[in-house]
Length: 366
Ligand SMILES: NC(=O)c1ccc[n+]([C@@H]2O[C@H](COP(=O)([O-])OP(=O)(O)OC[C@H]3O[C@@H](n4cnc5c(N)ncnc54)[C@H](O)[C@@H]3O)[C@@H](O)[C@H]2O)c1
Ligand SMILES: O=C(O)C(=O)C[C@@H](O)[C@H](O)[C@H](O)COP(=O)(O)O
Ligand SMILES: [Zn+2]
Image 1 (cartoon, rainbow, N blue to C red):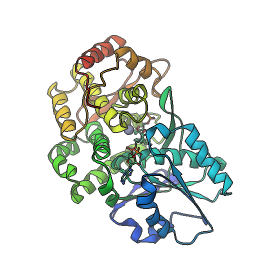
Image 2: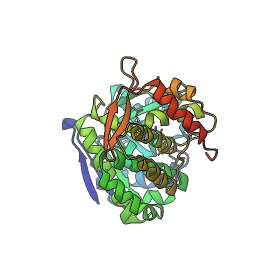
Image 3: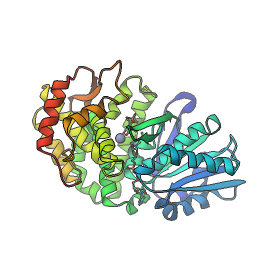
Image 4: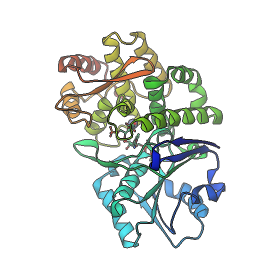
């Protein structure tokens, strides 16, 4: 087992990465303060992994199992309210711990409920998708979607521990696995050119879900994210680089109806667009875009926008992005591969040009 720490002073916490983590009940139990636990999962994950988590918890004063419907379309205020209803009905108090067992959707909603229930209770992440293991379980962003925008209602609420059992990845469907790889590629692009080069070599081993390659990808991704979060917990500055590709990606997810395009798929296309913009500015070699497209396609990810999204639809949705400041769109671009920056001087003309060219290459496969 590998352990790293997210250093946030009083809110610091460990991220454990390894196999068969629940065979040692003490690992989980040391992060649960009281006798009350609420396990939040969904209808797919509950039969696969909740029994093992329950066994590790042992006898407790109160254990509530909250099983949500599966899908990004349920990442809503309505589902969030359902979690709170269950906590109240079972009389959970301030010493309870919310335990999120699942992918990013479960983690984001359970975390938001933990942030709000009785003004904040403990929260432990047990991520079971690649995306959740490399990204959403670390850093404390929690949220639900709104029809007008992705993750628009939420809170920063750090977990008290993250338990990444890489064995859970063996039951993950290939499309979901690929979606997680998009966020892994993101880390290489924004802050670690060496990791990006490694990913180009290791992609076949990752796709074969070879244990050593997976462990390396997860450990490096979490370490990179932990450093960024430690430097800027609430996205006042540098943390925005973790949003590379997301301004375009979130527009795609919102326009397509949550769940039709997976988050990682939309981010993959968004990264291609953001890199193309960086190349147009002469900051990265023009050939870098082709290299990224090849890497993403080898991971079975889309690289082109959906066919029914005109530039106007992107521009409308992007104008609502959470990074907009004083009416100015802020985008994450690359000064070089491995070096992200945030800019606020991308003109509508520049964007229209980029998006019109993208319409010409639109994808019909997703
Ligand atoms: N908070 C953050 O920092 C952050 C970061 C990245 C993404 N996100 C959010 O995360 C969400 C995407 O997360 P995701 O990609 O994990 O999607 P997800 O949570 O929808 O899970 C993907 C699918 O895999 C199933 N599943 C989960 N684990 C499984 C397993 N081990 N075996 C079989 N099936 C399994 C789920 O039931 C679901 O059907 C989006 O809402 C995105 O906005 C948040
Ligand atoms: O942790 C972060 O910060 C990120 O931006 C990680 C992203 O991968 C993630 O999708 C996040 O939920 C996006 O945040 P948002 O603030 O743009 O909703
Ligand atoms: Zn993301």
